[in-house]
Image (cartoon, rainbow, N blue to C red; front, side, top):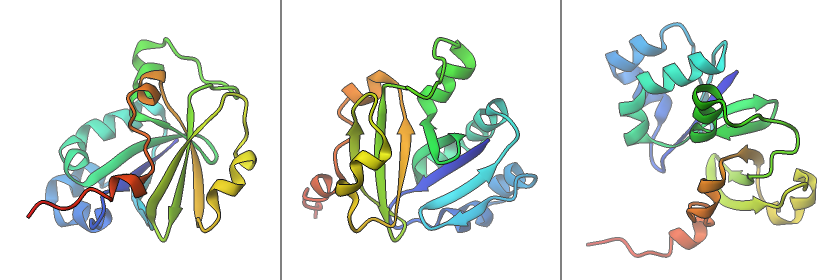
Length: 163
């Protein structure tokens, strides 16, 4: 089980974690790895992954864009889905999970998010990701798709900064 913490724009999450004694103590047994988009942490189980995310809650709220849990190689799930699977036990993950999105990264920055249709494969979305260094499949709960959280980042960046 792995956790991928995607950092917010302009944040070096790995440095931030090790600049604070509190987060250093929480992470002392995990040896987080710095990746271009944030931090990658290996843990033993989903329960321990959720527990670590809870311990790092203060840092996650301030410095992290998204917390993802690797359910199989190259396939991640959101924090909400992980909590639903572990605590509520109402969701059973399988290869045909219907609520999915594909996120594209370039130079460590999340540049686009595309909703995947049920039954589709990552290879079918190849044309959407020309110019992307890496794309990851993310499973989520239905409410996360309906909430409109999955707009491409290019549209979000058109909002002018407040002066």
